[in-house]
Image 1 (tube, rainbow, N blue to C red):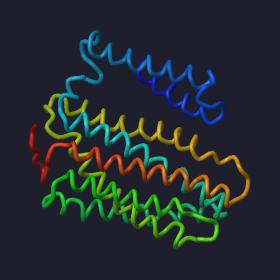
Image 2: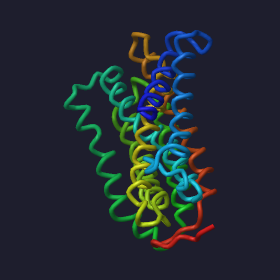
Image 3: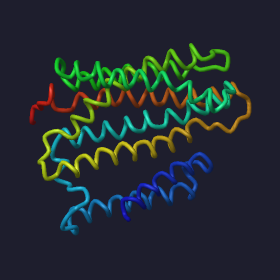
Length: 262
């Protein structure tokens, strides 16, 4: 209850900033309540619960603590991008729902191909930190390109080109990051570490979407003004992915299923 209420309050508070600004009570109260609930959750897990939902000792592992920070930030980027791309295609380019769905096929196909074929091969030959950082920087470049959208660019330059770049980057990023975050864990706590990773990614997506919607705005009516708003969101995603690349450098070394414990 504390974790769910805290995260929901934080997300709601961030969303209220768009309407009322940072200084109004509408966002400040839920943000403060959310922080207090999350802090109370940490205290309960550390002091009260005999079988903690999230054993805090997991965070003694650098792979888990730093890896989940990277996962939170990556989730804040890679999950919300579908939201903004959908709105861009439908509201700025005036695609139908069917055209929009078909427009996403290259994103999925490229990501699956890179994840299934290229990334496992590279993981046997390169440090996972390098793959995560490289993938994050490639994805950042693709999202920066996506941020230059206009209503005149069309599908090839406005959707497909950036998609090829950031889908390759996302494919390089996800598998080594997932493997690193769940590595070196006692078998008895493997479920907790895996659950923490998935929760972190989904929480990142929720908080990231709330923050990006606040940044993007999207209340104006003209297609080009909407494209400009969505472009700001994509540029912000690119900036956060650069931070993911920097955070990846603090992860322990890992190659082909083996990790250097530090």
